[in-house]
Image (cartoon, rainbow, N blue to C red; front, side, top):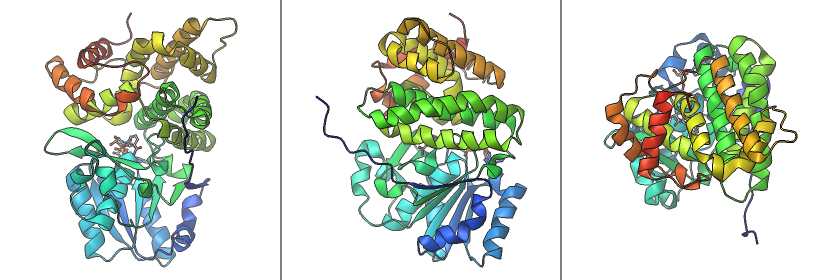
Length: 392
Ligand code: NAD
């Protein structure tokens, strides 16, 4: 018997080259007049951001700005952005940039609506229930194609004091509009295109494999996997391929819609690697995905066989285990083709950090829906495998 379940896909997504030029309409639809723009300092320094501000100006919009979000945003970023919101009399928030900027925008909306400090809303400490006041409307404008934060109800924040990542989640944190304009991703360097694209793939694969009843998300994950397989290498090798860029943006949103189901052990490792060693989120996922899939093979053979087919492999006549192995091989091939390092050793992760990373990963919530239970020792094993690289 299946449990009584709610299925909900509420985000309004506006997709297409040039979609950002209509930002005034999206604000008007939300009765918003003075947005706080939240972005990171890297994105704030590139011409495409200047062009975005010109669109706002030419549309007669006045705004305030917080443009100092750090990668893997810190609690302090959220606090400062919320202060600008209050001091400048803003009524809405636009998060433009990668996952770091969009998450910071969503978390700042919590503090703007609710007050307090962001760590009080940590989902693992029951923080979601403390979000009771209305939040300002949020518009999310992704400029990487990976995290899918634009369609998610969570923000991932780094605790300065605890050196770990925590999540803040609430249905009101879902952006009211997600604007997917592939032209905004043309300037992404190949290495970031590759790592963020593998993040999107990891979302779809981990959500498909998580043992939660959600056939709608499963279908979305399968299509998301197919789109990454068909388009990521094209986007890395030909950055101006707008079709490939567009499909990558869509697959990133699909991955995040799919992970309403929840994620798995690869994300727990990745969160720990970012918090302890400052490894970018997508890159950490890309390097850890193969060892985690190998670890899960016996528990997830059937679902990894579906993954292999979605990745474009011919699995006709194969057993689930044979097809599952093929999925892993295809991911190694894709990682290699797009220049992802094959090991944590290449990323300079130090072995003397393993116990801290494993303990941090074990405390992370994501592995609770891994197809196979993970102990702290399992995380040590997975780290060793990821450090060694693609051998076996
Ligand atoms: P990011 O936001 O940190 O951006 C990476 C780099 O790319 C930055 O230097 C940024 O300035 C640059 N950049 C962004 N867009 C660019 C463009 N168009 N051209 C040139 N440079 C550009 O990286 P990310 O991978 O997008 O986000 C990672 C963060 O998202 C992590 O903190 C991760 O935990 C979080 N995350 C959140 C969710 C969620 O559901 N909320 C899901 C996955 C990951």
